[in-house]
Length: 122
Figure 1: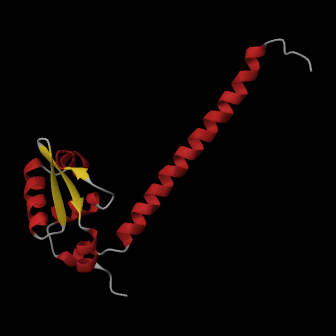
Figure 2 (figure 1 turned 135 degrees about the vertical axis):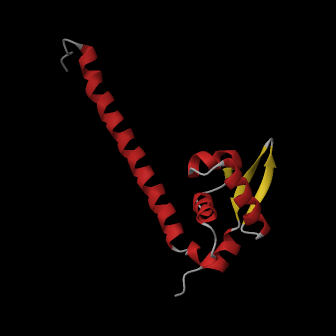
Figure 3 (figure 1 turned 90 degrees about the horizontal axis):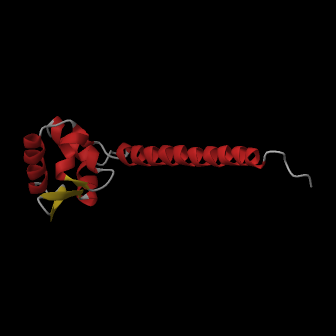
């Protein structure tokens, strides 16, 4: 085998191939998680709960997993006061559970209760 005149030139294509593969895998993972979240949301009709739009927005955000209460205003665009009041109301109705974490709460959804209350009729 003949040694190339510039050995560093052979590293470039391998780097770009590896980078392309990594980017493709990352995009595929994003698409998969988006579709998974969409399939979970499509099974539930949250409008059956007859709640305010802010509470429905919070529930939709929580369907993807537990969220710290102090992150909810940034993720939903709602004020801190609205988020706090809505989470307390959802906790009273047993739709979410709050776990104390430092100065805030980890908010998780009660999937079984939510599914029972707003399952689409078959």
